[in-house]
Structure formats: structure tokens, C-alpha cells
Image (cartoon, rainbow, N blue to C red; front, side, top):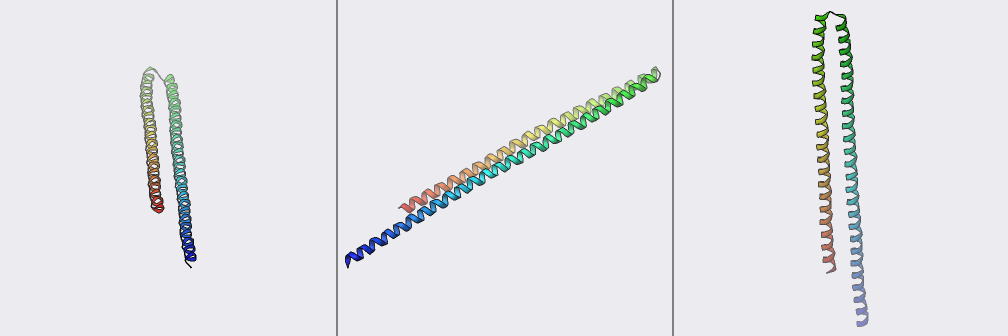
Length: 167
């Protein structure tokens, strides 16, 4: 009878060990899946942020091109107006020529001032785009760092649990 009891006892111990190993295996599998999912999520988030950054840059470039196009159109129109004004001056007497030249210079001065202001605005827009780009990259690094920290904490907890389970 004792032999059967010992065999039964050994079988129970083996079953418990087997269940423990199965549980350990399942936990490890689950942990690896979670870790994989977290890495996948982090990569997707990073990709999405890069896409948003690309779109933002694309929009800013488009706006800058439109501003340049408008500036060039205004410059062309203003040059055309200046030429028409100069043509009128040739047809008028000397006194009216002097007056027209004075007006043309004022218009030219205004054009240069507008060009300067528009150039300054375009520069500020470009500076702002760079600043926003830096902020977006900084946020990306923070998120990735946070995700890495969480993964390390989870790894640490899992190792601790595995160590506790082995004891």
C-alpha cells in the first residue's frame, strides 16, 4: 500500500510541477505578446507622428508657395502699373513728368516695403515651422522614452514574478 501511496504522491507532485511549468510557459507567452503589441503600438504611433509631421511641412510649403506666388503677382502688377504711369509721364509736360516720377518713386518705395514685409512674414512662418517641427520631434522622443520606460518596468515586474514563481 505504501508503494502505491508514494507513487500517487510522486504523480501529484509531477502534475503540480507540470501545471506550474504550463502556467509559466503561458505567462511568458502572454508577456511576449504584450511586449510585441506595445512595440507595434509605439512603431505605429511613431509612424503616424511622422506622417502628421510630413503633412504639416507639406501644408507650410504650400502656404509659402502661395504667398510667394501672390507676392510675384503683386510685383508684376505693380511694375505694370509703374510702366503705364511712366508712359503717361512721357505724354505730359515736364511739370507733370516730375509729379508722376515722384508718385512712381513712392509706389516703388511702398512696393519695396510690402516686399520686405512679405519676406519677413515668410521668414517668420519658416521659423515657426522649424519650431513646431522641433516640438513635434521632442514630443515623439518623450512618448518613445515613456513607452520604453513602461516596457522596462513590465520586464522588471515579469522577471520578479518569474523569480517568485521559481521559488
